[in-house]
Amino acid sequence: MSIQKTPERNSILFVWLNNYAGILLKTPTKTLAIDPVDVKAKNFKNIDAILITHEHYDHLDPPLITEIQKTTDCVVIADVASAKKLQLAIPQKKLHVIKPGMEIKIGEVTVKAEKSNHPAQAPVTYIITSEDQIKVYHTADSLPFPELAKMAQKESFDVVFCTVGIAPGASPQTGFEIAWLTKPEIAVPYHTATVASQKEFGEMLKKELPRTACLIPEQNKIYQVSKRK
Ligand SMILES: [Zn+2]
Image 1 (cartoon, rainbow, N blue to C red):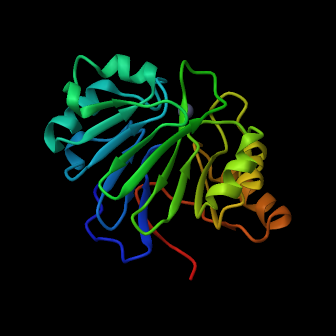
Image 2 (cartoon, rainbow, N blue to C red):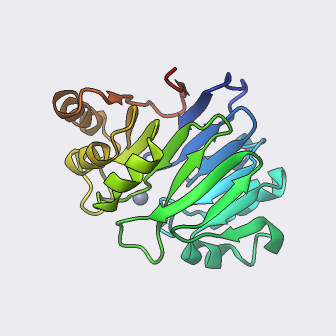
């Protein structure tokens, strides 16, 4: 999966890649793949960075990452546990370990790690700020946690990806609670194999959080999100 076109100014493009938290994100200058699994490495030709949130099989596929890294020479940003599993395969100067509170620049794009409420070894969530200051929050498999509200006040998110299934404890309700706490312009339900759970999430949003738009993505389709003027 690659995104041929370049987003306009003040926009980003994204593609949902699998039943989990796999996202391809393109800003005007950079392309990031987050938690790519169940995809073909050869379809990823222009990647600047791969971001990994935690070591579970549905988020981390070391051979796949090794292959993408080799063909694109991208950097790999990973939580402590995932980085350990990648360190023999990825050149040292290309592998960056990240912990909650840390920030890494990819050109003009900023990647900041925050905590994740998920039973993995050292899981993180990612706030990605584009060169136009579009704020995307990839919450990986996280369940809601109270600090999200404060974080959201500080960041004012444009897009938040919300897990609505598959992960332990995750449901449309917990996904909705993430949206409720973060109050983005657009909330995107993912990490599920059923459209029904995405729609259930959408219904809750419409009723309880009408100012946040719900974007129900289909896999492998390109979506553009623009900053509200
Ligand atoms: Zn997962």
